[in-house]
Image 1: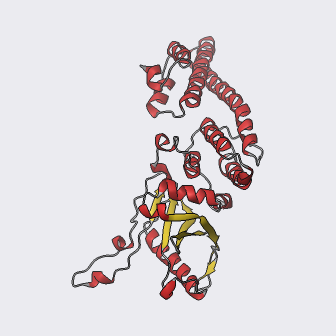
Image 2: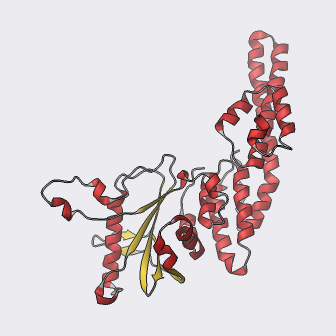
Image 3: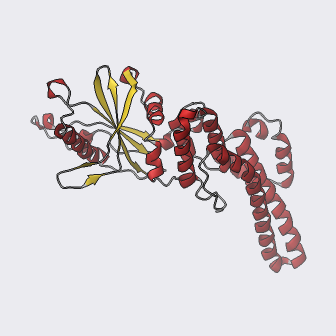
Length: 340
C-alpha cells in the first residue's frame, strides 16, 4: 500500500516510544546501547536559514549518550521517490541545525558541536539506490584535492526492503508502521491493528494509541480496496471491531462483483454463440470467479501473504480444483500444504 504521508505521519514520529523502537529495532550499531532513553526529548524542528526559508517538516530528538547529547535527526519529508542528491539536502539541513545550535549556545564543553545522526525513511516501490555518502556524489581528482571533500553519511531505512517474514515477529512500533505501509489487503491491516491493541494497553499510552488511530484513519483507511469510504474512528479497538465486521461483507461484495463480471462476459459471448449458451456459461464463470475471490481472501486471512504464483494458480483453476482447495484450507498448516 502506497501511503499518503501527511501531518498524521509526523505525529507518529513525534511519539518517544516510536523513536525508541526506531533506534533499538532498526539501528544495529553499538552506540545505541549506550543511550539513556529516559533523557529522550523532542527539539523544535523549525529554524530559519539565512535566506529566511523555514524548515517545518523535520522531527528532531535529542538523547543523552553518557553525559553528552546526541542529536537524532529524522527527515520527515518521507521519500516516495528516490532522490539522487539526498546527501546534499541533508548536508544543508544539518548545517542549518548546527547554525541554530551555535546561535543558541547549545554547545558541548570546549564549545564543540554535538553529533547529529541523520535518518531518511523511504516508502517507494523501487529499492533505494541513491548514494548514502556525500563523497560518492563528488568527482575525485588526483593531486590531493580529495582531502577537502566534505564527509557526510546518512542511514536509509527503505521500508519496502523489509519482508513481512522479517517484520511480523517483531514487537516493535516502527515494524508495525512498515507492515501497515506494505499491507495489500484489509486483512493484513487488521492483523497489525490487532497487535497494536495488544501492545498499547496502559493509560500512559493513550496519546500514542490516538496517534496511531489518526494515522490509520487518514492514511490507510481513507478508502478500502472496494472504494467504500469508512468513518473516521479515533480508537484502535473500535477500528479493529469495524474491520472485523466489515471484512466479511467486503469479501461477499467481491464475490458478487466476480459473479457479475462472469455473467457479463458470458452474456457478451452469448450474443455471438447463442443467448442460452452464453447465459449458462456466464453464470458458471461467475461462480468460478466468486469462488476464486473467496479462496484468495481466505488464504490472506489465514496465512497473511499471497504469493503471485499462488494468485495466478487460483485465478486459472477449475471449479473442482477451487472446491478442493477451499476444503483443504481448513486443515492446511501452510500454503505449500494446500497446493502440494
